[in-house]
Length: 55
Image 1 (cartoon, one colour):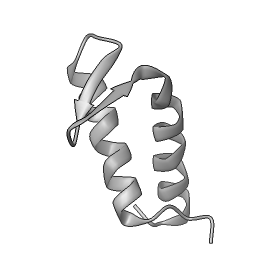
Image 2 (image 1 turned 135 degrees about the vertical axis):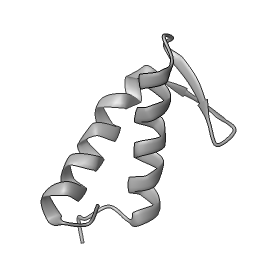
Image 3 (image 1 turned 60 degrees about the vertical axis):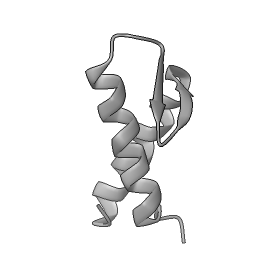
Image 4 (image 1 turned 90 degrees about the vertical axis):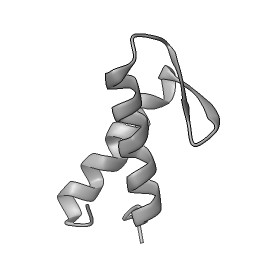
């Protein structure tokens, strides 16, 4: 129930990779402007996925 979907996990990983490759506070992922403030949540999603074996 609380495990993120495969799509959400993949999106979180794309956002994390985007910020890793950029040296800015903003990146464009899938045509959407993403602020660095969401990065913490993306790391949380990936961590949950890894702990539950979903990702």
